[in-house]
Amino acid sequence: MHYEIDERVGFDSVSGLLWLISTPDNRVTLPRFASQLLEILIMKNDQSLSREHLLDIIWHNNGLSASSNNLNNYISIIRRSLSSIGLDNIIITIPKYGFSFHAKNISKVENKLTLLDEEFLDTKINQEECEPRYIEATLEKDKSKSIVVKLKWVSIFSCLAILLLIILYARFSYYSSMPKSAMDKYQGKYENCDIYVIWNGQHGFYSMDKISIEIKDLINKKIINCKLKSTVYVYKSAISDGLTFASHRVMVSQCPNDKQAICRNIHKDIISDN
Image (cartoon, rainbow, N blue to C red; front, top):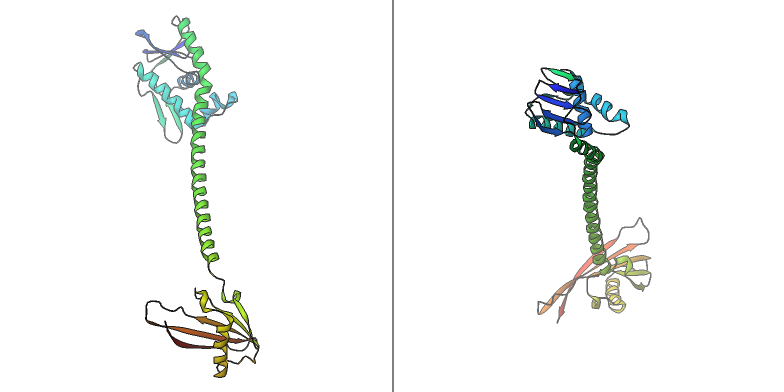
């Protein structure tokens, strides 16, 4: 048994063979799932069939999984095959729903198909053997795209992580090469004053002997009082080498150990001959 569509095209669902009735040598063989899909459309001529209905009948009821993309692929195969033998625009797409087959006349012919020779049997067997691979290739393509996207994001995050590590390392190297804060530069004790220095970038400016001279001078002038338990911070600005004589500033801050007491800050300018 086979179908004749609009008295122009013959279709055998068993072999998947399509041919032009007027010229039987003009023929096309459909893949197995495409053949099953076309038979359902023919049997439901002029009826609207949902995508879910077609997927259930051809794939899900046979324990197979497929997507709307698979269905679209097979509809395209059927359309191209029918168009190649002169039957165009017979399958209508119903937006957001499914498809409908519109033929003016469909008849069933009970006569045995004489076109089904050994050549087409071999073609049909090869089509069926390749059928699962066709679906798998489609799914594998989607899977490959997903893997490529994931690898792309992994690469981006890896680059960002490496960049962050470089920035952190640079900042660590920069700060680790700098002297510690004033609290880490304890120089010694003068009477009841704990003496700390604030780094100015030049080692020669600081020694306890030089600092003691500064402290004694400030004590004699009654600017600071080291009878009082306190912490004294000393800072000397760097000397300019670009002048025949250079000025630099000495700044001293005395903070009593009593947390409620206010720190006293003084400074003085010094002119040095070079």
